[in-house]
Length: 125
Image (spheres, rainbow, N blue to C red):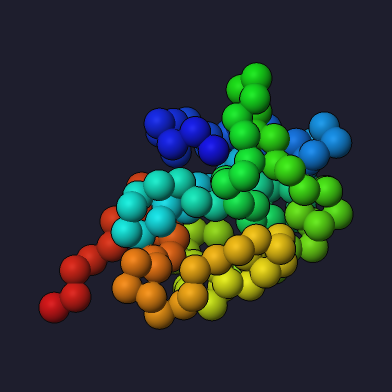
């Protein structure tokens, strides 16, 4: 995914699956804790349905919409963790495995997991 895009500009954009079928609208963008790079998008899949998490890599921004290279059925079956909260390392691993994506070994010093864009975390005291 293009890394020069402000994640706040993704909110509200339409998302489509690999076949061009509309999935829904982007509700939230989750950033990597260490790098600040947009990593996941939560897509509202319908008026009364839940949000589905999709990886922003290898997704692409095409004609002002997010093109997710997975089938709509796989996306809708993604684990549901709710939106507006920090994704734990375990939750992210579940998502990576769901989409069949490679991920670094948990516990590596350079592995960090996503938080909601714009959400400020308090420093531990």
